[in-house]
Amino acid sequence: MSKVRTRFAPSPTGRMHVGNLRTALYAYLIAKHENGDFLLRIEDTDQERFVEEALGIIYRTMEKTGLVHDEGPDKDKGYGPYIQSERMASGLYLKYAKQLVEQGDAYYCFCDKERLDSLRTSVSESGTEIVVYDKHCLNLTKEEVETNLSAGKPWVIRLNVPNEGMTTFHDEIYGDITVPNAELDDMILIKSDGYPTYNFANVVDDHLMEISHVVRGNEYLSSAPKYNRLYEAFGWEVPVYVHCPLITDEEHKKLSKRSGHSSFEDLIAQGFVTEAVVNYVALLGWCPTDNREVFSLEDLVEAFDYRHMSKSPAVFDIVKLKWMNGEYLKAMDFDRFYEMAEPYIREVVTKDFDLKKIAALVKTRIEILPDIKEQIDFFEEVPEYDNVMYTHKKMKTNAENSLETLKELIPVLEAQRDYSNDALFESLKAFAGEKGYKIGYVMWPIRTAVSGKQNTPGGATEIMEVLGREESLKRIYAAIEKLNA
Image (cartoon, rainbow, N blue to C red; front, side, top):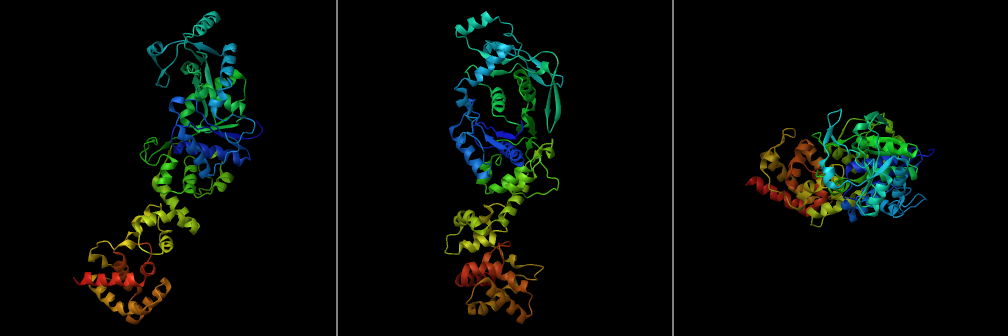
């Protein structure tokens, strides 16, 4: 295969799991790094788990993340259809399965569920318990097969794997993996409902679509030798396989779909931005040579090399993702940030303040968008607070001297007409200089009085600019009264 062609082949069964997003991203990066083609193929052969709205989720996620496919259900470049159920309508998979039957590499199986359930469990050399079909139907004569088919007896088609010997499979990350053929089940190729199995359809479609590199999670490593048996039986070229390491949570357990941050939609709903999620997911199993951490999608295309992927499980660290998200928010164009932040601000602030000024205060001080609400709640109303908050060792303030400072400031603040941040700061700086105070000695009591919080997005004068002259004075008078009580 002269041109690199990769595919993302999700099953429409629900939300886009982080692991699926990583598979799509790596497949995209491998193709684009080599100026190749990236395909989207929908694998809907498991009709029992098919979820109609999942198709929309797949398309929306691909669009939002920038993983634009060159070919797919909506972009047929001559390799379609790109939806497996539509490909099945032409009898494509059954044709190839029957070819294997004719070659002796596959056979019809008529065993019912009761018999299959009675098969004994075997133990592999590694100590793993496996159930291997006993080839009961392999030796049926052609006449017996035809009789069963004519009688309408339910059937499947199975791959005929030799009992003897070994099968070796090569993966770019995990190297050569050799498995005794005795451990390989005669997997089903065509199910009793006429649909191909995921494994069989994958191989046929990858070959016909000229896929050069197959990217998927390492949970498919155990199935990989069976794929090789199929490629060998057909005489087809085996693609390059890239199996991605497991993604675990902070407790080193497999990232569950029940986790609050296991899907792309979960993360966006929690206030993460798309670019940060894509960036972080790229680092779940891959490490650039220069240990750089922040990448745009274009940067990733240039830098990504699957040969630097790890075999070790990747830990999904929500704390690290929040840090990265904060970096993206800091660097974001303000207009875009405000568009995203405004709904969160309006949840808290109903008064007639300049919301853009509030957004500017929090932009560099949050990690995820919902953090905004806790940071700005005091703009709506000063919370109940203890006068002990006026005590600050570094500023050398306490409730008593803060009361005196605020009283001294009243004439200055009442005379002040320009309540912009810069003008206020210059006035208060001049006041501190005249009194021989350090600027922090003046600012801490004011900030406490107007916010009632120890941590605020912005200093005293920045907050007062948003509040305006009337509201600022109102809060300072209330603080004086509270300190006097």
